[in-house]
Length: 278
Length: 107
Image (cartoon, rainbow over all chains, first blue to last red; front, side, top):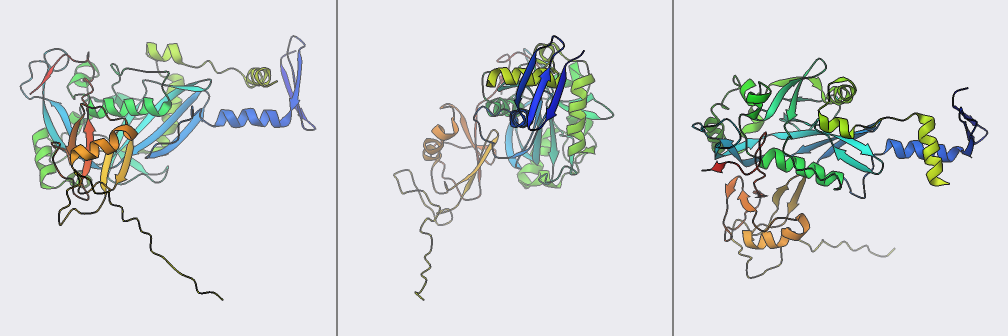
């Protein structure tokens, strides 16, 4: 006989294949499900700009939006002797940016969240308000064009993001944000993944070379909100669905394999919960 | 029935006057947008110097002492006076992407 779970008359009874019987109040079962549905926050409250948080099967996806502003970035110099790595030279550019939306995927381990490598960033000329809203591809170096499930992703390269898995999920999100915007921009994605969304956006007016974008930003701080960025065919909700689906099927880098949850069965999870809460 | 008294809120969204508070005709009151990573705040810092603003924000936003102040994307010195509507960032370079950190130079 396989494991069985019976809900009856306000009680939940689990009978394992080995004959062990565990009985708890139905409210305990509901409590477990409620805790599973809510992402472990480790005491941190939602930061400004948090748009969406969704938990499924040991994964937590966070969608965060930053407001439009003008930002100084370090951008690879036109005469840099290297495309990335040692010897690469940079100069500062001052760029008008639209709303930027980060999709950050975490693994849930008990009461902690660990940031994965599967994080994406998109632009929008308007704040996102609904799951049916659409975003645009970010015309930035190091935002790699990576194929996903029937879509093209704007993947954030986090190879050298210093991870602090003991940090709260908000601190990890902050570190990802800082790495994205304050890490120097170079041709690493072109070299390693073959494409980035800055080069893919070559037909978008006034972005190339980057000095032209800088010039347009000096003429108008809100220049970015007038740019016809390349549209993403999927809605925000469809991107979220795709990111969860891709976690189950796409090949995973070694970091993912070390941290990916094993998804125990409902009965196994309830037995564990009952053991901890008795 | 007793008359109801309505009072105006006294807070005017303005920092207290200090030695570093340097009001001008156009910047006496108002909010500054502070974008610090995932945190975005509207803070009544107009009229303050960068030095004073840094002191006000450093602890609550955990700003590194050597972070560079940028106002609307332009580097601003300690004596720069903030004007309402500007956006203030404190930036500390975070290595580079796709390669080992601290291996290249900015001109």
